[in-house]
Length: 154
Image 1 (cartoon, helix red, strand yellow):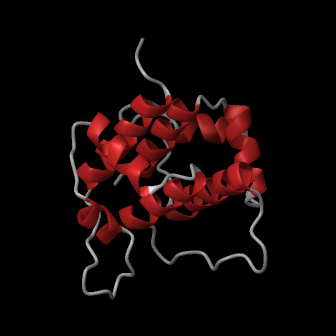
Image 2 (cartoon, rainbow, N blue to C red):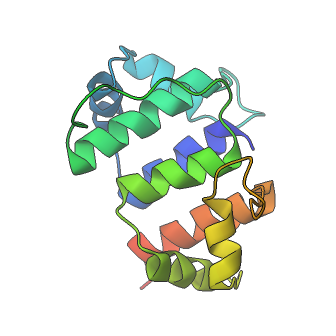
C-alpha cells in the first residue's frame, strides 16, 4: 500500500491542516517541516512528490494515537521493522477508538461487506493459525469508508 495515500485519506477524513499534522508528528517525537508534509501529501505524478517511508507513517499514526487517546502508560512500543497493512489498520482502529461494529459499519459504507470472523482475523498475531493478511484493496476500502463515516456527503 502506498503510505502517501494513507496520509492523504486520513488528512481528509479527520479534516487536518498541515499545521495539525506537524503537531501530530511532534507528539510522536518526529520533527517535520510544513514543506515536507506538503510533499508527502502530493500525488505520485505531481512535481515535488516524496515517498512516505514506513518510519514516517508509523510516527504519524503513533502521534495520532497520542493526540486522540493520550500518551501510553509505561514504555513506548518498539518501532515496527516493516509497516504492513494489518498494522496500519490496527493503529487507525486504536487511534479512532473503533469497535468491531464500527469497523463493520465503515466497511459497509465503502461497499465492502465483511463478516465478524473475517474482520477479527485481520487483527490476530502474524503467527496465529487464523491470521489473515490485509490486502491493499481492503485497506483502500477501509480508508474510503472512514472518509464517508467521518465526513458524510450532504
